[in-house]
Length: 539
Image 1 (cartoon, rainbow, N blue to C red):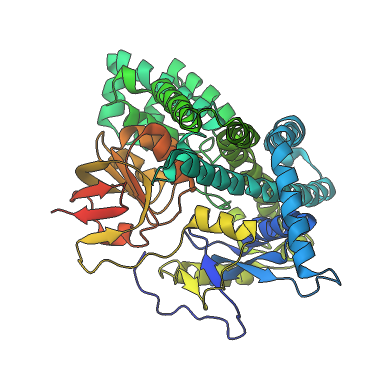
Image 2: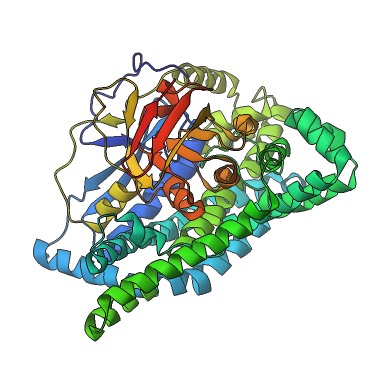
């Protein structure tokens, strides 16, 4: 990808402030990906925050294939006094935070697990055309429902931020990250997934023949070597449970780990250089101890102030679910829930190819839902798909502007607070061309060799002790944090996935640099100061 913003036309009628959602969408997306998933995001978030009383509407817009987000004020708020509405909104948010974790665990998550697990294992090829199209529509509604739940879960980020502010207040600490660390150290789907890969990596280390294969071949060649082996059976069993995901959200065009085992093999390769006492369980125990120490320190500083202690404990109990909720919703909604739409889409694509209305099954992703119905009814869509594919490839060579339009005025809406803590705010460039400014996400300082990893297909280049330089991370990237000595990300704020995991494994991290992957080259020695949010290119 180049670093130019030329040839990126902005719609003439575009108004307001728009932010490129590079955290979830680092690449240009097809029209079907946007219609199925991003439109569902906007629908779900808007429905959730409107129910609570927000005066904003979440809007997603595909601009030249890239996803942009905006919070648009509602036009009609009725006759309710704005101050009364704001007070009602805050009361509703406070009430939701009291039950958010319980509703997620007891009500929403079981339903989502049942639905998603059923969908990824359905035999779409055995369905009639009518049943396939009906199922397709049902699954679209399910995506919209899941992103509505996701919209409610957004307020967990707000609750975490409020707790971090309270922690800073009661302890007198200068660093708000301490409060976030006090919410970490819990079992999640991410730790379970990492533990499974770790177990496989220990088998490879203990077996000279397997180790020779893993250390001497490329991931795709390793898979062909392993076919038919007992180890491949174990890897397949792992992928049956944890492999329904890719390295980003929304990208239905990318195969899941279950389809392409080389991605998981890549992660196992990265684990091989790590000693037995530095695995996921060791990191989890360290995070648990860190959490307990931070909570004990805060309570000791509060001392005999029983009212203050009660306030602190109540705030903690209401949001102690934060880290498991963030990691698990990402697994079931953002990853498995979204990619489940890939498989009926491909089956529709194959049937359109058989009808002669598409050239390739994958071209289905360049059609909108209405186009697909027409193609299934015999209308030729080959030229339309080819043109959209060509447009996407053209814009994929362009780096779009991170922001469009003037920044909005300050707002006390909890959703705005979430956006700031999750996405971060733009940072001022450093006057020194060898210094990159960002957001201080996880404390500590490391000087080491940098490796720029833009997707998980490049993960094997990261060696133990290297600095991971990336655009963003999501849960499938978590194994790389065990290999890296520090992380630098183009995107993200203090509550981005990258920041949360870096604090969990106790390595320095700077996020929101905007230019890290462009300015830093493979092999350069860099210093990452996660306490000050600075990255220096040494050589």
